[in-house]
Length: 402
Image (cartoon, rainbow, N blue to C red; front, side, top):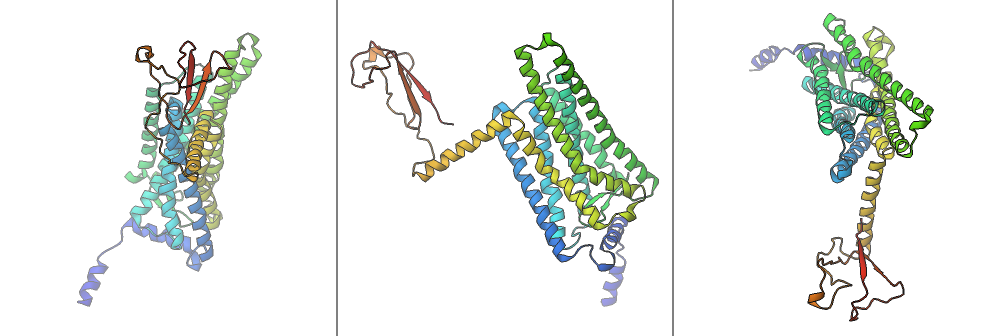
């Protein structure tokens, strides 16, 4: 029975992908067995958990604000929501695999897990970059050509963004290059070091289509935006108050988008440089310690974008302030022992006619939690419920809490 089990086990040959994954594990481990010490793994686990938690909370906040407040639902805001969605998915999928691997002192998943980790991180990263590129183009046609986009334009653009990103990240799944373990052994990506002609061609076209082309579009758009703003300030006849306000607002939005693009490039450029060095045969210069820092720095970009467009976008900032004030008022009401739910029982109107025939066409009732302002023709007149005098008209304004 033992020899039968042994022969059966020996017949189960590992697949080429599993052999490559095991070879990558041994390469990352080196002579010491693991590329990092146990304390370093614990520190990396804490760091990646903090990045994922902050990114998850920030992007959930943005999505919650967009769903709750209707005034945020604009065609331009759809692109910001698309970025938050992709960053949210990176914060969940891209962090969870790496976090568990840090806890186990090495890659803890099989070939399918490695493929999913490389595919998901690449997909959501490209979606964010392409969305920022489309935002730059939207600012270009808005400021330079004074064209306003609608929701159909935004939805079509978002659909093309996802299809374009799926085309590039799905190619390795179909055989044009492949996803494998990175040098640090805590995540997977495209095989940058492969010398196969098909793999090197994919790396070349990938950098051109997902880095060079988007950067070229961004430089073109913001170069024309800067030129248009300078020309506008030189023409004194166009500087009416209304036009200045519109241009000032559009310029602020353009600055916000430019800051988001700059932050994205700062976070991802070290990772791109390391990948290019490995692709061009300088992988021996890259150690696991050098490789892990750009990888974690790139994932940290998911926490920055929500902060940028909440504090640089006036509408998002006002909605966040309103949401915080509402929760503070509810918390204060709870501390005072008052019910948090507003009473729906109507209260007798403060000002109203005494006879049925003198009733106005519109009857106004007030909630017990409302703030009432009573305005009369005579500021010195006293309001008395028992008064029979109906000759004086009183206007009542109801101001509801936030």
